[in-house]
Image 1 (cartoon, rainbow over the protein chains, first blue to last red):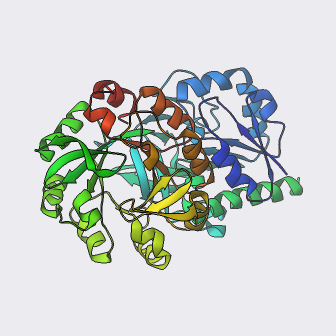
Image 2 (image 1 turned 180 degrees about the horizontal axis):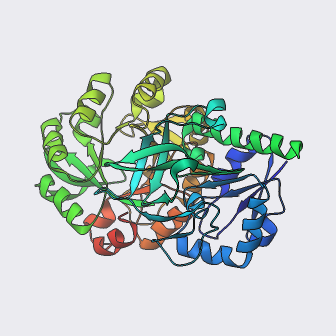
Length: 203
Length: 237
C-alpha cells in the first residue's frame, strides 16, 4: 500500500513518515497537491499554519476534495484535520470543506495547549481496534463543526470542549498527534492504515 | 514550537551555569519569583524550573518552588534531583504541569515505566547528552549509551516528553546541536524538548523545522543575547 504525506513545506515530516513506515507500508512525501491524491491513503500532517498550508493546497484543492469524497482514505492530523474544514480564523484561504464548519482559537487562558489531554467518549471502529484515552496536543486552534454528529471523540481544555477526532466517510481528522502519543498513538495510526488497506481491497 | 525560559535555582537564587559546571556560574539573580513574573510578562507561556541543589544532593529549594508554582500563571515543568515517587507526587500536588526526572529514570527503567503509567503525559525524562552519549549524575559520568537507543526503549511510555540537553553546547552561546535534535525528534513517539546552546532566533526556527516541540532557553535570555520580546513574540506560543 502507498501512503502519501502532503507536504505544505512547513517542517519536518520524517517523524510522521517513520511512524507510518513502522506499519510496514511505504510513505511518500509529496509537495504537489494534485499528485498527492495518486495514492492508497493520504495523510495531511500537523505542521505549519493554516494560511500557508491553504495556499499550498489551493491549486489542487478541487482535485483533493473530489478524491476524498470519492473514498480516498485520508487522515488529517492537527492542522491537517483543520484543513478538512471550510476555513480558519488563523489565516486566509479555503480548507477542503470535507466537513462543514470553521476553525477558531481555543477559548482558554493557556494557549497554546501543549501537552497531553484526555479523550472523552471515543466512539469509532478505529478506537475499538486501538483504544486511546490520552493523547499529545500542540495547538492553539480547534475545529468547530456545524454538525457534531461527525465527532468521534472530544477533549476539553480549560472548559472549552472541542472535537479530538472527526470522521466523514473514509476521511478522519484528529486534533492530537498520534505519532507523538507513545505506543497507543502509533497503534491508533496503524489502525487507520489497516482500515485504509482493507477499504482499498474491498473496492 | 514553544520557547521555554529556564529558571535554575541554586541557594534560593536564579542562576545560569556554563557547560553545566557548578564552578562556572555566569548569572545570579536573587529574586527568582520576580524572574518568573518577568518571563510571564514578556509573554512566555511555559517555564522550566530546576532545583540545581537537589540535583547535586546539596540542599533543596522546595519551599521556593512551591511559592513559584502557586504564583505562576503559566504551566511550569519542574525538575532537579527528582528520584522518588514521593517527590513526584509532591511537585504535581504543588501545581507542576509536569515533572522532569533524570538520573534515576535513565538508570532504573522499571521505576520510570511504573511512574509514567501512573502519570501519563506528566513525566518528562531529561537526558543530558554529550555528543551522542547519555550522561547522568550531575554530568559527572558519561554512560556508554547512545541517546537513540534510549529513545527506542522509552518509546513505549506515555511520556510528557523527552528533554534533550546538549551538555557540550550548554551555556556557551554558540548554537545548538541540530543534527542531534533532529535525529532524536525523528525517532521519538513523544514530544522532544531541546536544551543547550540556543542562542538566536534562527536556532529556534531551525529546531522548529526539525520537529522539536519546545526549546528551553537559559543563558541567551539572561545575558540579553536574545531579546525576550522577539523570542516570546514568535515562539511564546
